[in-house]
Image 1 (cartoon, one colour):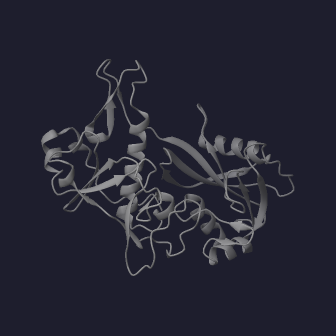
Image 2: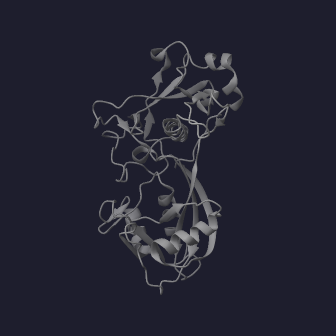
Image 3: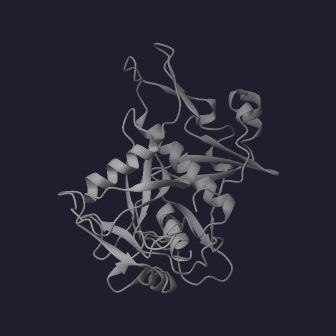
Length: 320
């Protein structure tokens, strides 16, 4: 749901000061606060206000987005030329899009502001891609204020798509941390009849998801899958296969999805301090939770904005 970018990022414009200045007046501006929230509005007769919970599954969506839209701001209120902190997101047709970090809002519960977890799946393709890119870029700038080589302050260049160090000349680009996320199913049939789900202690009660972890230095994606599953629940996997990927700029990850097979005969050993619970869940229970909008008593699935939800939906609807 966060992989639906449709705009032309137009890399050639990023170093052309004249063309950048021409693309500021009349452009559409995405404001993002330090919590990753942006103003949104409802579309298509959807009742109520934007969902705020990062954990709950927004039930108003049919799953394809389009129930909410970004509330773009007019660039005229932010000066005649792009502020130094603005980042160019791209263009589509006659529309040009920029993003800008704004200070924390005084009203932390303002329902007109929502984050990617809450509305990522409810936005249309273009808006979902714009907000994902905006959050990713602005999060990186927040953490990249000093040169990694000499420690001097850096400055934004290339319309926000790079930073350079005036002291030593080093140029740095937005960082993305790869992480694997794996749907582990059992050996019954082609796609199994049970899926391995787990929950972290910090999650709300009854919320479960597939297992995930960050790739270590010098490690392949497939090796990371095997290591993470073994470390987190004590299970060996085989038949690791790629499913797809999704940007997850919270703060700066790329989730790379896989499926793998494991035996239900192996005792599960949740890792202390990391995994609170883990157990095998039958396909019928997952289907029931999906049919109910994302949850049934005892099982709350990941929200629609996450690749985990897409993986579970694909598995549940496949023949075993």
